[in-house]
Length: 271
Image (cartoon, rainbow, N blue to C red):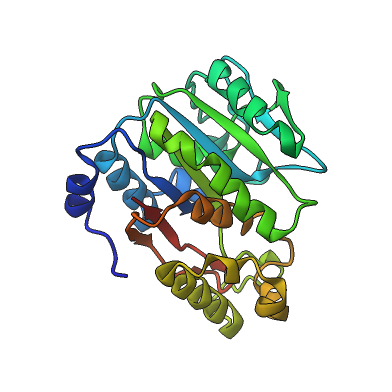
């Protein structure tokens, strides 16, 4: 797998309503207001993507316990769920419409996993921080789905398989998190931990060979999983995105690298 060129990607995406499925490593909230390689890559990606009928985001920053919540609000609010950052970040708004009818259909289709409607959430920064670059006019309906942190990893992988059919209805599925996310081990000098590189490489190899089940196998991943992710909510969206891909998809790498020693910025797309 090589890094995507956006001209190649645009040619690949040009002909069909069938939507890609994307995982983006969102990293620091500062990426929202900084001109850096991540924000530029999101902008370039947005220029290459088709305009979907709606966008479904699974963000690491909306967690639930024992049920899956789906935001059905008509006008999702912009949530500034971070602390101690510059004032400019708190002034950002992403006034995209919701997709209440579609969101309610999704809830009904997920009745077997105890899914419920929610009108209180909106768009957290794991969603709007990316969407403001992908679709800056905020004119595409968008809704979020929570991550049930009580479920095992293979459950989240299988959820992606359930959501896969939405791709054929013009719905762009985006997972937002980081496949390595250990804030306890940040290194301000940028020294990258060996375990962070090892886990990130393991994820990359499994994605390339479509060995997705290995990414949900806690026995195979062993203690390395919890070194890389003391809690799993940032890792889980990558599994759901992988599950939503199918055998005809190609894998495109968008960005990579480890920030502050312990946060992977690996981003990828299946189409």
